Length: 210
Ligand SMILES: [Zn+2]
Ligand SMILES: [Zn+2]
Image 1 (cartoon, rainbow, N blue to C red):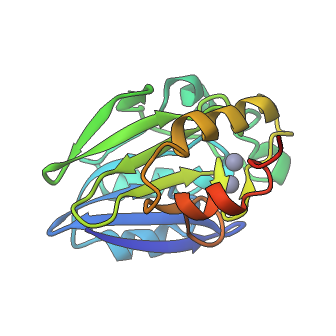
Image 2: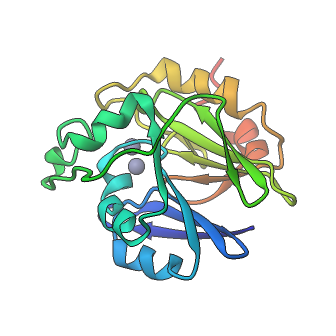
């Protein structure tokens, strides 16, 4: 499995293209759609997965979906309507007007799995940064990987001061759903650098408050 990480406009959220042989899925096409489309053009793209519906993770969604019409768009059911509201997805606050022009194909729920290239993408609902924040876990034949969106960052956690955020819930989500994953799991967050479950267990100051 190959993972291509691309920080994209407007504020450098991480978009990922995960591929195996000729198939791929895209996580969080936040902007720079042309760059994402070029990088994914040789693959059969089967999904566009959203970790949540904030503007910095969905800004390229319309163009990417248009380029890969077979790809199924997936977002947690609690944030489906956010895709269609510039107020809810916060794009309005930042002077864009980002609304999705197509249908959501898959409404994600905790515990679902999505088939991908002979393996399974496990859907973990991790509310806190937003009510529908979702992480994607793949056991993978090599090291397991987790795409953590804006829930878990290297030595940090997501903001909880936006509408629908909860500081109590984000810590509960991380402790109950993410920290039990294998220590060697590589964490690919929605912003900034990668980390691992082992490192965050040891070093994350937000999780080590008693
Ligand atoms: Zn966010
Ligand atoms: Zn973000």
